[in-house]
Image (tube, rainbow, N blue to C red; front, side, top):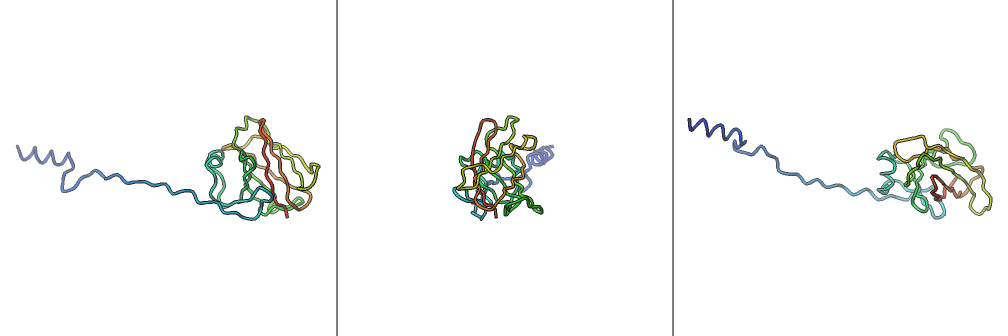
Length: 170
């Protein structure tokens, strides 16, 4: 009877020459890769690839594209992912001048107003509006065409917020 009790105790405790319990494994999170500067931005707004800031990842609901150049607006309350890379003047197709805007501050259902001005000019060359009807995250898909090549100041406004990005169009 004593032998049966010892065997049951050993079986229940998992002490059969080794423990069933696994030792804890330290999980380390790799730091995000640093962004690298790529052509596509101009003036005070460089274009980047990789290494998105934490606010951008969060505002994009962890769904931002990888391998697509992006610019960070000034102040950094918006970013634009340039799908139509490189951007081209006129109304190109295949690819179009698609830019996915991700805003840091809530849209609150308001549209995104996009106004473009050729650097060195004093008049607006275009103005467009894009609805807040996409998700997940605080995003606005857009096509932003400009009439001529150069460095363009792009002013963004939504829900009482304003910011500026500069984009190079070839």
